Amino acid sequence: MLDKFKSVCADCCYKDVTWAIVNRGLLICDECCSVHRSLGRHVSQLKSLTKGYWRSSQLNMVQTLSNGGINSLWEHSLSDTKFAKKKPLPTDPLHPNKAEFIKAKHLDLSYILKCRNSDSQEDLNQQLHSSVRTSNLETSLRLLIQGADPNYYHNDKGNHVIHVAASAGQMEQVELLISYGADPNVVDNHGNSLITCARLNGFPDLEEKITECLFEVTDTLCMFLCNRKPDHKTENFFLPEPTECIIFPITNSQIRSRLQQLSNTLFEELVMDVFDEVDRRENENISDSCTRVRDQTLVPFLPVNPELSTMRNQGRQKLARLSNEEFATLLWDILHDCKRRQNPFDYLADSKKCAEEEPLYDSVASDEDYAIAEEIVNICKINLIYAYKIANKKHIPYQCYPPFQIDSNDSVKNSAEESVTKNFNSLKAEMESDLKSRLITSEIRISELVNQVFELQRKMDEMKKENVELRNTIQHRQDTYSETDSAPEVKPRPTSLYNIAQQYINSSNSSIDRTNSPDAEEVLRKADQVTKRLQELSKTLRSIEYYGAFAPCVENVRLAVAELSAIFPQGATEEIIRNAVRTLNTNTIRLQAVCADVDATVDKIRNCAFNMAKANRQILTHFQC
Image 1 (tube, helix red, strand yellow):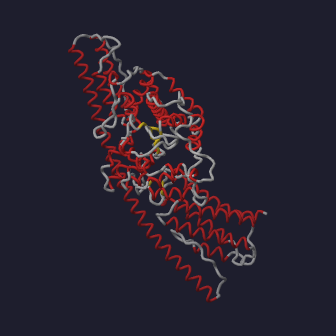
Image 2 (spheres, one colour):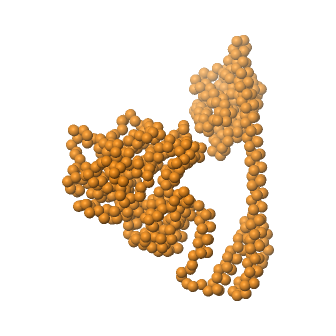
């Protein structure tokens, strides 16, 4: 493996390199590795070149970066002759020379190439989104160092950065993104996973490699426990027997039950911490076997991660206090619970099969014991029957059953078992019939809803057409009035998706004095109506998810605005009132147009309602003073 690399230690230039920093793309010696171990896995992801387990794509990624001179990116400032700090030599002491340099280089990032001030976070993310489709790992790593988000989601294209890399067949880019925290389980806006993206774009050979990335944690735990991992072509989980483990685990059902009670979030955090502890113990065992290290930095427990809480850091460090047997037990239970959470139904079937085949080691069971176990199973089946009937609110007559007695007569036990089995099969058939009827009902309901959607779409198209015709009619009338000067200029009223109350508005306009200001109480009453209608629309926006239901609320808003506008004379002297009324009418028309557009977003409706509420507030404030 070392023949593939042509490099010296990236931190002290020592010729013998035996370790790799996966997330840096660098190779280091044994002495520098001890300092990196004290920094923590959140800074340096270490892996032995000779004794560590490598995925082929992961090794190719590190090889490409190392042979491409990526160290110049991490030591960019050192190339400047004016920079006072110098790189340590192989003969320099580990403490403080090499240790201080390594911490400044990798922990503080003092020597990296800084990004330009003009580059924003969004610019870096966009560049990373474009870079990962190529084989240029150096550019992608530079963007990640400068702050690009490995989980960036492109809103316009509807995919994450890691989807772009998988679609382009760039497995090394996928490995680099995962090492910087990219989630390999995410899906794009079409619901496609990484494997699906690679397959759809003509890269089916990446399926096995991506699967190995998805199950890296459980594979690592399994390798540490029994030096084996599953063949992902046939299975994704390998649950070793206690006798197959390197260190025999202690069977403890209490620990297993406590793990099962954890939520998925807490269980995920626990697995991540245990994974880091496994990495620490593996690297510690390899470092202890090294003979070259003169002065080694001890790492008795996981270093503090400043991104985690104090309580979690303390819990992570307490993992080091577990003995080998206790830690093996924890790994064994975690692997079983991982499979249970991944597919609980298959796990129940496997557990039942194992329970039937596995002997009881605590005591030797007698015939009476096995008879009691069978009777307990029968009781459970009976309880299941009655639980189902209770759940479906069926009448259950009260029955008194005699206590179960141990009887050595096989015929009695067989008849009882046949009776219970018959009842159980009857219940099963009844449940299947019930589910089928529910399924048919659901399909009919879905068909009806689809027809209603098409009908609503057709009505929407008709109303949009009617809306355009009504607008043209009002515009034509306005032009006619302006030419004949038969009436003062009337501003166009908003048209409706339904019937326009034009006669009501005309009658209201004819009864209002065009020269005097309206009564303040009447204005406040009409403005309050507009406020209430806007509140109804706002409540509808929060509770309904399809646009067809907005139309009644929009119509109520339009009528309220029309009534408020009708009480103001056309020649109002106050500029603020004219602007407010104009804003109300304009946004009413926009609100109706947005409501008629099935592709419109709720934000557009909310913006129109906000502008109308603001204008209505101006009218209220003016007449309340």
